[in-house]
Length: 359
Image (tube, rainbow, N blue to C red; front, side, top):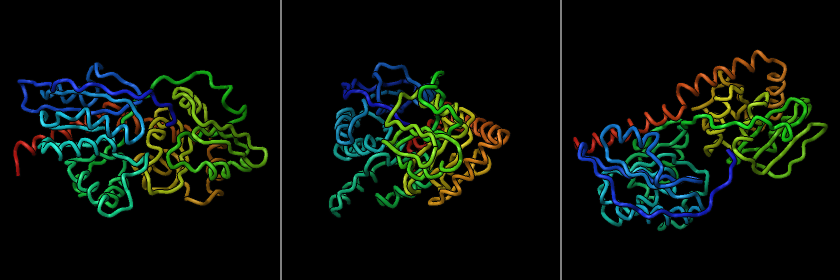
């Protein structure tokens, strides 16, 4: 989804939490667009604490990749005090692994939310890239949000495929803007929301001749052919993005390629809003949306297929309702925050258990 980042900030690393009921002390490093170290434990952190682990949660605000690495390095300077460290993204995991190697920490390292929404750490110089790969190889468990992403990282950093787990995004619907009339066409429309790997030009071509308008959030100026009414925005508040999606006849996730993760949050949000989807026929989105179950899959480079799918959903309210209902049922049972938290806690506790038992 498209949003704005908070200002740069870094938090002092407090002393590690120790819990006499359990031998495991866990540090959770979260990179967010806002947050405070003093927040109560939530999600999988709370479940791990409930299991008897001593859990410390440290939060830094989102910034450029180099800044995030530096902040995460600072926050994990006491990595040897913990039995396990969980990092919430690619940059944070890289920093945690560096500190573990430099300080000779035996802590279990787990990366959650590994994805390539930013440029990967590749220099083009073989010697440097081998060092980067060695750093990432220090990670004991890597959680990605789609099956193809695991294969991409194995190829990118020569990682062990057995260290990967696939867990779909967990997402509970936040507040949705009620009044978005000023942002959308007066005619029925489809919504295309998100920046990462989106092919807005192909989506605009697909609207031609359908009589359906469009609202695209995450792109620059884009002209639609013919009399198609198209509204474009570089960014909008999250609640307005959701409001636009809720009032659309369908949510579009049309990708440039199938080589990168994209559209996962958008897919879950649309499913929770009971919107049918029209999406690229690519494995990278296949862990979330199924053709003829949650919407209609269309091939790359076939604008006529997209046009047909738009017309089909526009002309068949019952079909839209069925796809939307099935999507919501899937999201509520498999892609909620609670489901995600349970899966991550299960992975962490399983890794800790194996570490205690030994080979």
